[in-house]
Image (cartoon, rainbow, N blue to C red; front, top):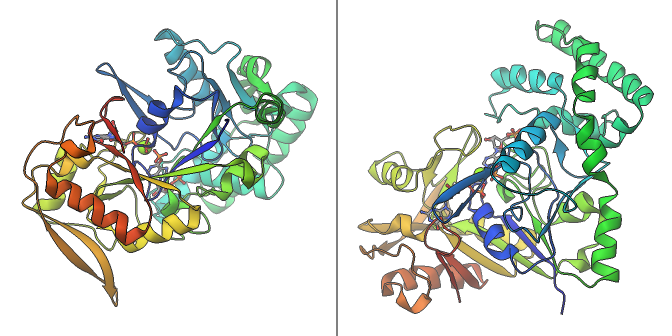
Length: 406
Ligand code: GDP
Ligand code: IMO
Ligand code: MG
């Protein structure tokens, strides 16, 4: 029977969504992105070769899987063009299997300027990709959308209005250089081939696939629950709905078509950018997590802050998203620790920890739960019981096959 699966992050992003979406893509008809933009960096490792995707859904490496960028995504045509070219050079085919919604709000160069200049003052630590300002314009109903590239007259009018507004902000408020409007239009038109080739009514496609053809789809989240515009650590968040509700608005289908919800969490916790992180470590344990886990941002290369797993935050994220199954990633990163802590309570702002003895043996590449060291099994079972949700997938390495299905 057909069944649709949502995969999303339960922490501050970079939980390993790309790896798991890729690993589960083989079984589905299409993989669909529903929010975010090229602030995402999703890493896939197959046969020793690493691919980092920013906009393209993580099903693209499977030649028979269709890929959709839904209306909820904010789209940089420049980033998309580059990513497609790189993947085509690597032998990936996009023809007749890659579709982008005409409703995607476009990220313009002036959005990027505004994002960068604001972040100097507001210090959210954004990825500087223009994400916040472009969602802002979408909500304010003045965005230029992918479909607008189909009519040059309309495109010109909309870009003129929007970029004049941006220029006023840039010049008068931030004392920055304005953008040349004709140049912006010419640059957008230079990417018209993307519109002509891939722009379509993606909601209509999804309707046909689910309702008429009884196909199974996979919905791929970007960022994570704690970066959600409503449910994250506001204002230190991204500007989209990263949680389960974002699927309905970002693709145009009702919640009853989401049958399984896999929430991804690292066996510990990381965060890139500013904002609260109560279980953050500043000691040797934190350094070990960063080094062994190779914790550097896949988009900006910034070092990720590291800390212990926060089970209260995880439990809340499970509720926020109606998670049916947890996937615990990067278990192997904890192999060498003498002891491991998890946050099980708070006293005021201070986390209260439960301490586990480390298993001190390699879990790398293990594919059967019963082959994990008993202490690692205990750690996983404790998390499962505390949070009240099955941990049905455990990841023991970055490669597609280094995965335990319980
Ligand atoms: P995403 O944004 O959620 O897709 O995650 P990223 O790709 O930004 O970051 C996850 C990083 O961890 C990538 O470098 C992955 O290759 C790597 N990774 C994923 N799962 C595992 C795992 O189980 N073990 C180890 N050691 N690395 C992993
Ligand atoms: P993936 O999909 C981790 C963070 C930024 C910043 C905040 C706002 O790879 O998990 P933005 O540019 O979105 O306005 O930045 O959100 N951030 C991410 N952190 N993983 C991501 O994506 C992120 N996308 C945005 O670091 O703190
Ligand atoms: Mg990432």
